[in-house]
Image: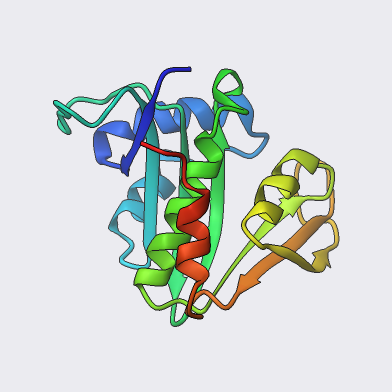
Length: 174
């Protein structure tokens, strides 16, 4: 894949995000929910787009390779969704999105980040482990489509000296 860049999700992106949700997730989010999330001051959504940010036109929807949503509550951040088109997987898109979410969390003075991941999603678990997430517990029957368990993963110490530098060292060279 050629390069890609990250930017905040905008209203014109919603149809592309919903198309991705319907294509790859068993329980896709609705337009009403996504519109509410855009207005939610505790939520941040990022999208990955092909190419570079040069000449970016935000009033026209661009192709989206993936997206991530994160909530910020007091001093905690919680990744609520990560999705990447199958043809864009294993090319650094999800990794870049998670890294960006962690860096924003640090900037917002979060001390920890959590998320749920399917017990069977070994690839995602490996991605999160790369950033220091560890298994904190299990949410039995968490996923409504098949009642699969979710692993609750967490990484703490976001505010500790050196954490940001360790993260930035993992960023791909530009």
